Image (cartoon, rainbow, N blue to C red; front, side, top):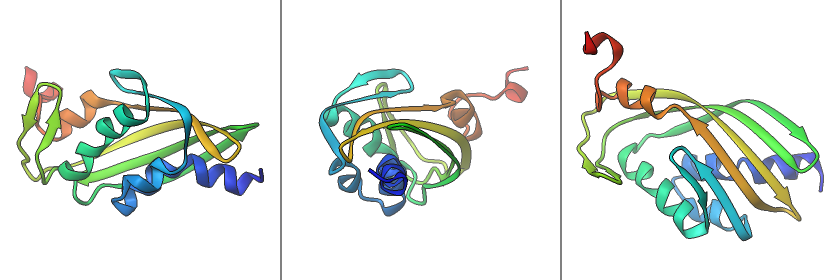
Length: 145
């Protein structure tokens, strides 16, 4: 597989969010796909979709911008910025979080393993605490004093 195709497959989640269509990303998932997300390791296809889908509703203008791409063999590492306005209800494990119209911006690292043109494994790392403080969901350091 050429490097451009490898990178395009690895970018699937970011591009699906930008297009507001997670089915684009789902079509690239290999049988047995596994995802590790913040506070949610070892997710299969359906659980990974369930983890990601609420962000589409909560951030109607969510946009991922990739700053750096590193390829080694079948592994692609993407460093990106995610930005959006908290304009819709965020469905979380503890229940719904009402929107407040605040904007947030975080850095995201995505590590993708691609085999035969399909995503086998995906790991995303981002700072939930930082995002939730920016959005006013939890107090930030300046509010805690």
